[in-house]
Length: 160
Image (cartoon, rainbow, N blue to C red; front, side, top):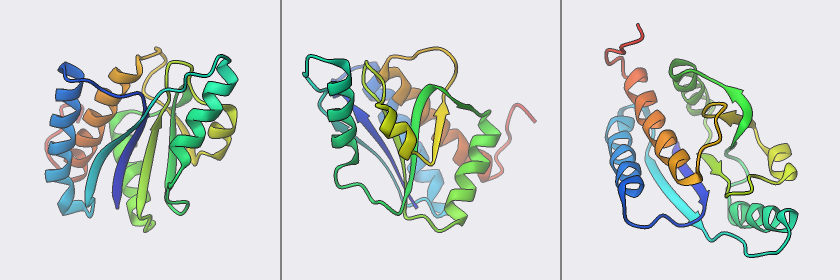
């Protein structure tokens, strides 16, 4: 299964970009043994529409364009389902066992996701109840993907 973080907004060079790259590289290396063949980040430009609803709709359209309709679609939103790291790892394993080709994590822009995007999701998931800047959300998600691979490989986990 391939893992994609599809996000609104472009990362520039800096600490966040370095951390996303670091954690996705680590996840890529450890995920091979689990059948996770790819970890990647794709980015779209933020909409410049005047109205929030128009921006959300345009960004949803761009995030969905060319997406594999048979894969999992996980929308990140602070109002979504909370999981701890072990539950997240187990969920990722279940999706992989289901034979899905791709699992797409959708990170919205400053205005969040359109309601239609949330409705089309397999799950709406929260990284926490705090609102995270969309650049930082990518870092947290990339780290949790790496952590999930290590949990699934049976590496010692400090919460056990």
